[in-house]
Length: 492
Ligand code: 6PG
Image (cartoon, rainbow, N blue to C red; front, side, top):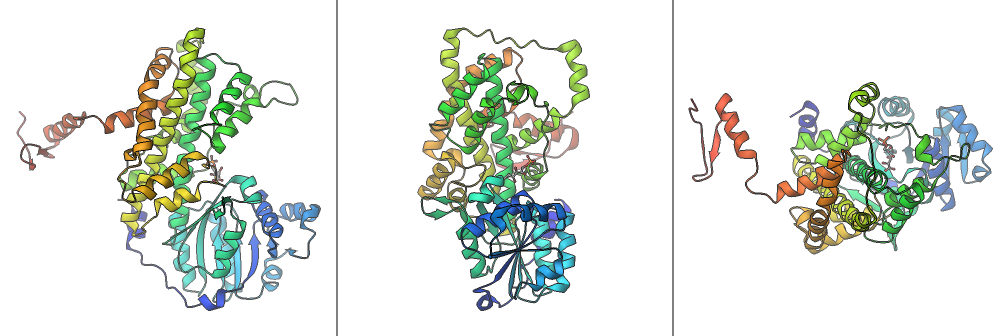
């Protein structure tokens, strides 16, 4: 086990100070006025919440002064941290929306001497959950409550209602009320989940992002097949994604994909995809999700594959050099008859793979609950993801229903409805993936999901030979299945 995991496990919850009565009403300040921060401030103002704003970057402050929507008595903008803090009466509620990592520690070290016991800081950035646990502990020594919240939904979510994953107890009433007010709504339910355990909010957001990476990869490969196997042009591909978005595949990311395919470059009139450089960046949250899955011993191959796919996309020199001798011509010479079955088959495979990727992510929650003693409520997490976040769509509501029906469900693929979609989607679509392989089209995400499902329902697997190999060269022993007994053999 890596050092930081041991550290998390052995930590007790930081001292909880008895400030709860003190927390009925709080003055609210927002630190970080880049796009997310400005949009969240506008969201608050629109909902009648007064807020003071500060950013060390004058450019971010100027954007507020130039924007008439901030010209409100409910908003005050400050040029120095001292003036910002002075305008807020204790107990203060400070929300950080700044870059994760060192900038958070830097601002905290500046804030600590200026704050009073009973003040509360909420970190709404994409911080690593172990940093949040550490900071909560450190700030508790100063009588300051530090909480972490994963806020999802990008700039539009922040503006009109994000999904919020809050970790830690106790939480000021004022903060709970604020988060309910500004979050997205599914019917009348706020898309806010409150998880016990400092760092648990950022943990759940990290897994959200891991699934987000996996789903983006699956959608990208599906577009790739529509283009290079089935031979549709961009408007045709957009029409397919729009159609899919009317049914079981309906989601924010499906709709986003359709929007991208419909877009043209205003300068050249070319389809957007034709002018976008062929590599994908990442800021780390997907990688963290893959790392924690490994550390917790959970199989989550689609999250890993999606991170890997972004790394592979950046191997530009190798990709360039390998294209010379081995370039595989992409020929979408599919017949009209083939197209007819391929598009629905692809929809089925994509849905099956999407459900599989979510199932992998939700399994990580079980392991984390055990390891960190968090009791993560998977039904409540799925409910939170129904609106506001990047993963919003039909599936989180189906997952919520699965856990409502069977709270102790061992694996999401065991839910009869979800399992049926997965089995049918893969069984009807595997022929399509065989076509893709034969035409040398790389679709590792879809195939990873298919193999994950096939492996889980196969017995025996290839595992026995691995167990024997370990014993053969390393005397590691193996379990005799006929006696359920651990033995080691002399293989010579
Ligand atoms: C969200 C998003 C948001 C985001 C990440 C991922 O939930 O609103 O997940 O946090 O887009 O920054 O970005 P990378 O792809 O750059 O890692």
